[in-house]
Length: 513
Image (tube, rainbow, N blue to C red; front, side):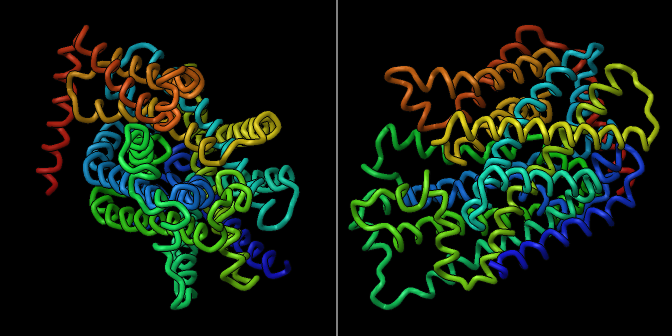
């Protein structure tokens, strides 16, 4: 046990030191929320991807690999697609526009893009973001409690509280810069840990170990890319849900905050390859951990959940303890906490910045000097964290059979469906209007809740909504509603202004380059 705590202590010391160094650069709200737009490509790429992965990857996806086998690799395909589209097709234009508008939050960008004279767009965006961020953070705190419980035999609630305190401390001290730097460090821990585990476990297998054949004998569905029963409408819905998880990278504010904060376009061009490599390595490794865990620990006819926990989410710690000595187990405690804390810290900064800048300063015309605005953001960071902790503890009592996977995916899907379709259309369709943007956000927000709690309970179609999760229907509904509302009452003047903005950006680039 001493070995585990030693590695964990070293990990926490690095986080605090990074936050203390970063705190020296915090002078105003722009520093606290964007790091004054100075991120290099390594930091931006690792920070964006570590933020997007979360505990869902280390505990949820590994568990999915153990439960369903090879079909879980569709998650890797979907994640790679989402990351590629975000970095190769969206990041540069978003960076150009946010610099042109001098935006420091996504809501800032939206208000400038649509030239709104009212606060409706700002209010809808900020409130929707705050609600789903609270849910998402709660899911991460829940995972923290589970990680401490499984790895260190702590009481779940004590683990949740301790993890909450750690992430709040370094987020409050160092703001966005601390979050980005610690994400870089934590992302490196995740890559090394996740890649090493299945590789070492596989090399430990003897000549008489036949993974594919054994899994096939346990259940042929484990080695079928479409799952148990092959290609069926229900399996297609399940695969579709797994593939489209990557849609959350196409405009989620916590991910796009890195594009806004990166130094320049050249850093984006370099960072896209780092982001793709990171995503492939950690996602493919996570599924492989689950598959190997199913082979090593589950006999034919046994229930994986009985041995590896609800949703098989204990497969990673079980495999770690099987493969590595105790002093390295501590590294995997740090890896799980890295996935959780990189996401929580990013979400806290985004939420606090949105309320401080987008609502308090912009809606109420509040004048705050640099230090006061940063201080208010720090207090809001603490408020959001405490609120999210309360939600996580309540859910732990109300839904003891929950899995980390669905809890996290619900928050991720809510943010994605509310913002991503709207951001995509705002970047690439000049005919998109402010009314369409508001309608798209409300539609995505509402459908996320309806798909999860209403449609999934309906006879007949309910099973398909459960299989797909909430992302696909909510995402599509948001797109359709935003499009219809925009064409019902087009805004030719706004379309011309947006064209002029793009032309001004192009002219400036041609002049400078």
